[in-house]
Image (cartoon, protein in one colour):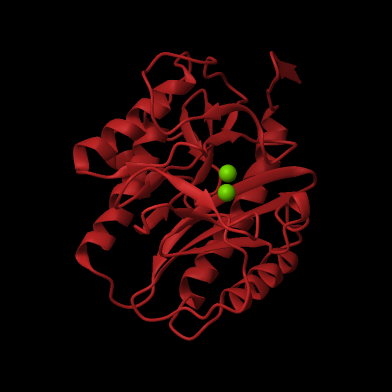
Length: 270
Ligand code: MG
Ligand code: MG
């Protein structure tokens, strides 16, 4: 059912999205362990493909506008949409891995950034701040609130943490029977704007943060988004919904229970 272009899911449909979300969350866990120095991004993609397939799901990335991977692998100054291939990860790299899956027509979408061996403290901190911004964005969402409450929490978390670039051209999004649906979830902005947060809405929240400016450009492969100034970037994403009891992070293995509790937010999962 759609209300003003926004898909409102039934509880049963949300349960199926949870199944898709778990495939994504479990696949990202597998990839976290697999992402070590010497592995290529193409090999990670093959592992992800097998993980999605063996869990009875299909990929929503593969073939999306012609995309050739089941994950995006974005290394160092690559922000998002990196194409898996022959690039070999080296000690000191970071790789952002974005993954999605479909179960019975319902989508999950999540991303994480992984350090390969030792990285500089400022890079570890970039990753921590970006992940924290994602969680604080989710934590700012409540029934009756507005979409930009999330945006505002993301921006204020990043701004309070230091001098970072918040990438502007790419946003979080509604998700359900399609991977990308209205509304857009910006990573900055004033609170209390945009569509109301209602039961049955599902959103992917995904801050993209750099150690430099917010400016990006797309490489000649028409996919890979890199920072214009060459600074490194991190990307974290989860798909979540709101129930009568609180927030439920559909792509987190524990449903978000632990991190939401730390932030004082009631858990809405079952
Ligand atoms: Mg994603
Ligand atoms: Mg997304």
